[in-house]
Amino acid sequence: NEIDHPPVPSLDNCDLSELDLSDLDFMSISIQNANLTKTILNRANLSNSYLMKSNFKNANLNDTNLSESDLSNSNLSLATLEDANLEGSTLNGSNLSETIFERANLRKCKLIETNLTKANLNEVTCGLADFSRSELTDVKAIGSDFNRVKLSGANLNNADFTDSRLSMAVFFETKFIGTNLNRAQIKGSKLVKADFTDACLTRADLTGADLSDATLKGTNLLRAKLGGALLRRTHITNSNLKEVDLNIADLTSAKLEKVELDGADLGRIKLKGAALQGAQLTKANISKGKLANIDLSGADLSGGNMRGTDFTEAKLTEVDLSRADLTEAILENSELKNSFLTGADIRNANFKKANLEGCDLSGAKITKAVFQHANLKNSNLQRADLEHADFSKANLSQANLTGAKLADANFSNTILTGADFSGADTTDTNFSDAKGYKKQE
Image 1 (cartoon, rainbow, N blue to C red):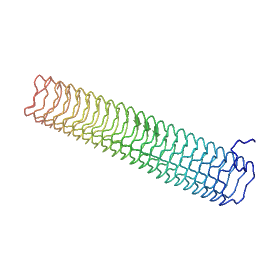
Image 2: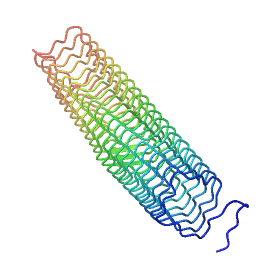
Image 3: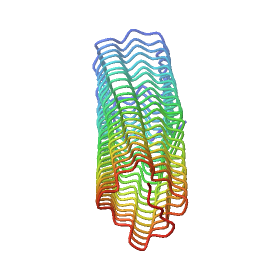
Image 4: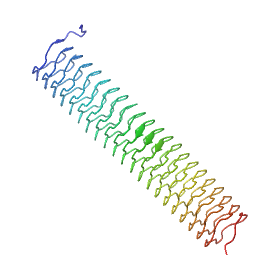
């Protein structure tokens, strides 16, 4: 084959297989289309060289200097490059399957569309390298530096990046199916449309990362950090987000089905238009969260902190909010039919025009809460503290208010047909123009 290259020393098309060329200086040499299978080049200097389309299969290049060299479309499968220096080199289209790069320097390398299947990248330095559209299935990259790399369109399925640093990297449409990213540092990275199906991200740091339109199906995010992360329109199903930090995260229009968020920190989170049907959120912190229009039907929010959270027009049908803190929360026009708020603290909360039909609010603290025009038909308010609460123009027909504290509560123009006030404290309660109210003997 004709080879075009500058006038440099040439070993093009030569058979150098199984030779021991250790410690030799081949700087700026051309060794294209050559056979170097099982060749020993330990500590050799091959910097600034032309090594395209050569066969380095099973070669030993430990501590070799390959910086700024061109190895495009070469075969380095099963080769050993421990502690090698490949900074600024080009390996586009090369076969690097099962190659050992342990502790190698791959900074600023071009590895576009390379095959790195089952390669060993443990403790390597890859900052600013480009792995776009490359195959990294089953790669081992434990404790490695991938900061600011490009991995868009790459396949990292079943790879192991435990304790690696991947901050400020670009992973557009990257596949992480079954990948281990335990304790990985991925802060500020671009992960738009990435696929994390069955991936492990336990204790991973994704602070400020962009996971918009990403897929997290069966993903383990236990104790992961996602503070300030973008998860707009992200699809999260059957995933473990227990004790995850989502403070100030943006999950606008995200879809979270059957996820576990027990003990998670969702403070000041944005969940407008998101769907979390059947989610487990026991003891979660969602204080001052933006959850307008969210769908939490059937979710478990028991014992959670939702102080000052905005649930305007939210779907909360059959939700468990027992013992939850909803003080000063906004639930105007929300749907809470058949939900459980037993023992909940909803003081100063806003339930204007909300539907609480069939809700269980027994033992709840409802002092100074507002229920104007709300529907509380067949609701259970037994032993609840309703002092100074406003139920004006609400519907409490067939409601159970036995033993409730109603001092200074406002029931003016309220529908109370069939409501039971047995044993309730009605001191200074306002029943003016109430419909169907029967004063208890």
